[in-house]
Amino acid sequence: KPDITRDEGVTVAKDFCFLCHDKIGQERKSHRGLVKNGCADAGCHKYHDNRSLYEDFLLKHLDEPDILPVVKQPQRNHAEIMRELNGKTIHALTAAAHDAPQNLTIDKKLLQQWERSSHADGAINCKECHAPNKALAWKNKPDSTACKRCHKTETNGFLTGKHGMRLAQSLPAMVPAEARLAMKKDTPAKHPGCMACHKTHDFNTRRAAVDACLTCHNDKHSLAYKKSAHFTLWEKEEANTSTRNNGSGVSCATCHLPREKQRFQGKDVIRVRHNQNDNLRPNEKMIRSVCLNCHGLAFSIDSLADANLVQRNFSGRPSRHVKSIDMARNRSINKLIEKPKEVEN
Image (cartoon, rainbow, N blue to C red; front, side, top):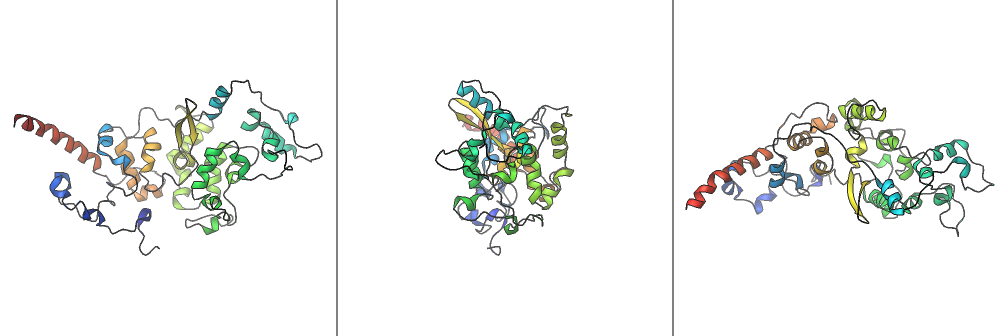
């Protein structure tokens, strides 16, 4: 209902907060004179996720530089951890070792792609995907249910996000032509499933992290990515010409499919979160999971609050400043000044 819906899907009245917090100006000196309808629009408070604006969190990250001395995204280690837990030596498979039916005509190019993939490296043969259940016949084009046998966490995440939520309800997949964001005209009927991003045999992570996104998305933010400093860092890292450490490159997936640490059988496993909507509304949710890997908190808050900078895919500097972190600093100083008086009394 666009007529009553504002940014982030909010429909309540702008002065809704003052139903309970009508005396906030009296309770906090920093809030005196603030307008009643600006709580959620000033970059200070968010209806659905306020964790990056908690006062103690702001104080913890005071005076951080715009770009941290060490910039690094968490490195995936799922495959290594699974091998360690398995306790067995896994030998990579070659194209000659494929177990597809002998009477099947196989494209040699597909075999070569599979041979170079993480599946062959992890001894995952053809039947694992094409005929996982011996009672069923070989399936030429497996769907996402085949992926879920090994990648349950990733598949469930995908089904939770906008790309896959219709499939989760047993509805036809959403296609780009139905999207509200601008999409490429030549991809109106492409279904966003696992294979749309990862392809079928080569599982190229570069394609999944950048190229697959730009195959469909045609909005200003997406189109500006390849002109950004983030893309330059990504290109250098992919070409092994970067002077920075591994993990300094920033792809589309870096921000929209962030890596997160999970505990699995006593190990810290870094996996990719496949719900691409999880940290979008409000966009401050990106701060903890993405931005703080490379940037200071104040710079991150200001950047995400600058709508024009977001449209330019963060090429440039923020043109506005959110005062939350300054308020936290001043409040902390005032508490220290007032404390001796309380003790004396």
